[in-house]
Length: 503
Image (cartoon, rainbow, N blue to C red; front, side):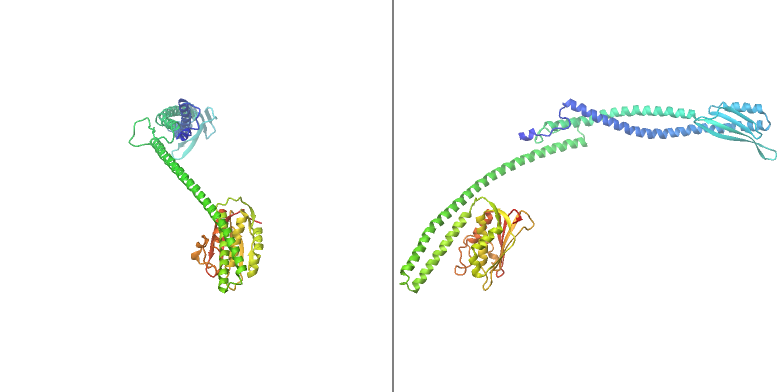
């Protein structure tokens, strides 16, 4: 438990700051971002709202200025038309003076049909609006005659001045309002959110994740409807509780596996010791039996030489049976010694070229091949790591069995091949024949000790050959199996680890 406590997660962003320093620093960063974001958002909204408001105000003020033309028309049209028709020019000038005195009128220019002109004020400049009034006189016949045209220039400077004044007032008022609202929101967020987050972070950083005590409790009044902070605290508390239970279960499982591993190791040592004792006993027994058996065979041979002429046919047959029995006994003893030497073999492995190994085997059993005119086909074989002597015994036993268990009146054909089916780290060595085959019911039985499917008179042997093959395959970390049926030959497959490149 101490290991997990020492490696508890710490906040990686502020490892060197104290509690107060961490809070001030985080509050400053969060507060600054919050104020900036609020100000930006409020500025965008304020600009949009102010633009709409200012546009409406500008349109209203401009319309009010332009309405001056209608006022002039309503107030002075009759007087201008009468004065121009009667050539009362002093009255015309008086009327122009009266119009130019209006605040929004910047310039007046009156032109008659006879070329007379009057001007008041100054023309030109920015922020102006132009309009024109045409004066008529109606004759007794009802005909309207143009007596003059009044060109009016109105100034919009007062309108623009009011608009700019409103812009600065709106900007300043919105900025102050946004700043105050941001500061208040920062205080509210710090009071209701940030301090609780700091408390949760401090709790998690100071306590082990696997501690079952010290749950997070927020410093505030409980609410009937939990919010996100309650959910975070509840989730952390639940995770810590589950982590503690999982850690305890893990410790129990580790302890249980240690006990099982100890028992397995003890049983494995005991089994290894028993196998070694069995192998030593079998080897010693077979070795001690070999000498009396050889002596018995020698005595039978001397008896045949000394008493052979005086023995009758029955005695000769009995003597030959005894010699055959002793020969089988010696073969059986040799096979038992070979099998015992295979058990718990610790011979170091070396690189074995199976092509060279099979070629040497074929030379050793050349007489057996020649006697039955057997045909041996050898494909490309790989180089593997193994025990040369054991591999030699394994392959030789399979080839000899393929020649021995041949079908009557059939030339034996034995095929030795290798493959790597779907995996580059495995080699399958196959020995295939066209012999008598094996009943599928006996496919597993034939690899047992002293298992024979035929009598000694039919096929000689001790019943240990395939058991030795299985032991050798096991010693190499592999296995052996057979595919066969009666009358259709057999294929023995040896699955071995290999180096997977052809010689």
